[in-house]
Length: 374
Image (cartoon, rainbow, N blue to C red; front, side, top):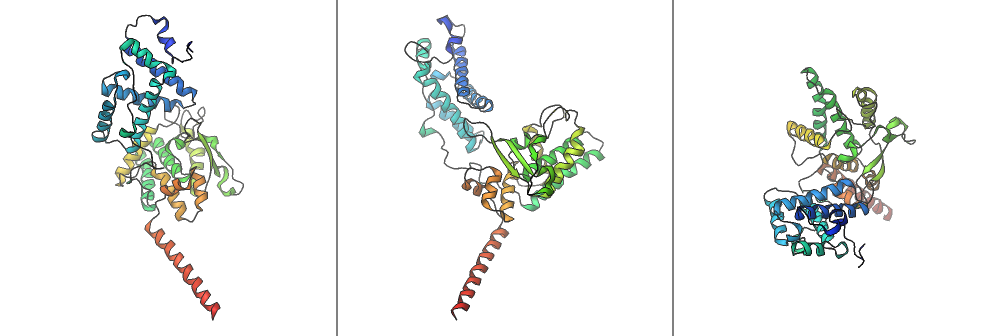
């Protein structure tokens, strides 16, 4: 803290003694990013979030070809336009990039950290906020995915799983490597659907994350799944939840994987991961995305279906099967019922049957009332 009560970011680490800088612009940018990283760590943000935000700032720096103290809203508009028109990024991705840039500008323009004064001294100008209300996207919906995103129909889901299972035999018959990985990938996709998991949630599962459910002993040691790497709220640790097993085939699938197949991985004895990679650690998200897209293409399914559609399908199929909406909401870990309802893509047959039951109930009540008044 300076004598005037201000904080000078982490600049004392980089600009100590006010000595002449060999590359003042480059050093100032790195000092700003280091200071911003320290501020975010102090707020409790995850390393993944911090790294993602820094990449966004560096992307804008490369696109604008200007230093932060020379940025202006016009440069930001040009970048946002390029992202929308030429790169065709989604609404949620655009909003995330804008948010990262806005947060960085807030940090370097905050008088408490002294960056503006230091830029004035070195470069004769100062940074400004370039992300304004007029040129940034707003977050007004709980779910920002494209309208085309949807759940699998039951026939589509069965076709996808059948195709994933068939890859194992095809690879073995061809005498090629990869049968073990194909088996693992098929189990991962089934697990994501069977417990309504997000991509990273299923990737981060450990063998010990399953337990007994005293009320459903038929599922054995896979009666309940304890998710430890759920989607975190802003500035908080990963959110945990317990997910009860609802389908017997899911427990049987994992039982076979854990007892008969997983042990063939060289790292299975030393790694806690339920789904290890061929070398070490866990299977990568990029691998899962790539395999899912290939299977979808080979089956001839709609490109609107993505890996997250397995989670949408879980919610939809539970609702169609008559499970209570509150139970489904708790299973998937949604804070609000409205979010769960947005995930629900019930079929026309389900809506028709619901209408038929409601009409039958109304007619039955009317007939009973008529009989009582006679």
